[in-house]
Length: 163
Image 1: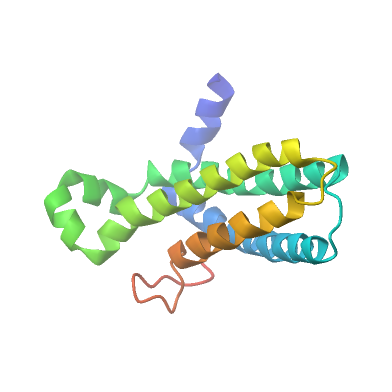
Image 2: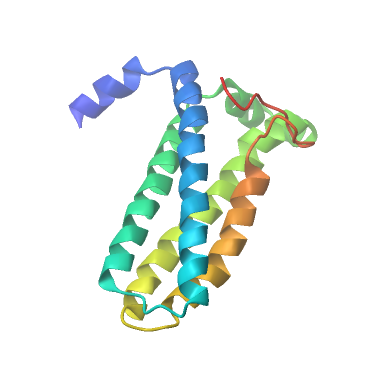
């Protein structure tokens, strides 16, 4: 625990933001690979195996790491601090509201749903409807994630795609 605190104090918000921003591209790549993998196996009516479950766990781990980085950034962000300093004004400011409330809420929801669907998929091992269930939920999860990313072209809040 003490080692974690030492590492945590060495990392400032700027470094976290850069790491979170670049790690996003790995997450998006994983999302693309994962959705294609789920869709192809769903359409081919492939049996969801224990090996598939382990692959799904690995993908889920990448999302969880991004969430941990995001939470660390959340607690070190000046934007979030500004939002919570005066919530009434923060709600009216698009940038503060997005980073102080919307982005974190939607990403938490998405990662919670990913973890729940991963856990539930364990009970679908050796069935043909395992990939169908994953397909049905992951489409919605990915829409939540994609709509909550601060893209450079976003009308909600514009941030550079690469820092």
